[in-house]
Image 1: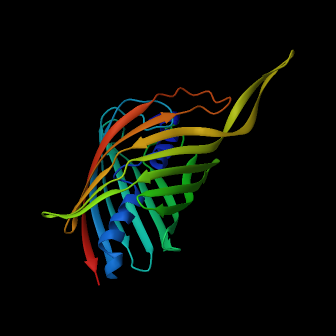
Image 2: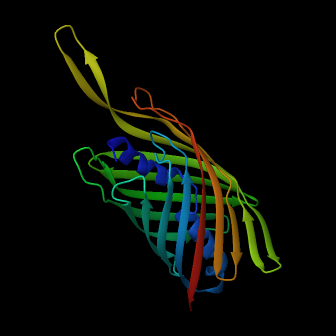
Length: 273
């Protein structure tokens, strides 16, 4: 796995609206648990079918699996551990993400999520470069049914630091208690990611050439998602397709390719009164 692929992985985790998203997990917990005053454990496994791509989005062209375990306390605190596996990487089990956060329903329409993520990469070698190993983020959800507006801020840090701002919106189309299905939820979404990155600019003078490191800011990615969530008792099934349009920052020397992929996930909830 090269330096670009490692760097791409962090942005992919942040921009992807797939079944691995902690926000989708929280939505399911809210619907099935919080209203009843219960805490819950969620056990899940997800599958991603990725197309080949380069740059910030996940650059793999084979399927990937991700098991995960989440615990949500009725107070709003939660913790999550997710593992990422793909035959495209060496070793196959290439990444673990540990998360902890707090969900705060500020008002009837406004919810706030604060979260910390730790990225644990399994790759080794001189060509492996993982500048971002930590992430602190805050997400805002403002609901005007059926439309919800979202604004995320995330600060990545490690050997380097970077900022990400992601506004977005999704439309919730819901059907409850249809046959044996407790809930159908279709919520197409659109997101834009702004961010900063440190780049090296080549400066050529008559007698010598040197490189100047500077920080640039701008649009980094557009993403479209069409998730379908189906809840049957304590089981949740999620199907999704995401399309990413990455954008190079001013002066950034990187090859970027649009990419789309399908994903699916199964989650089992265990309630604790």
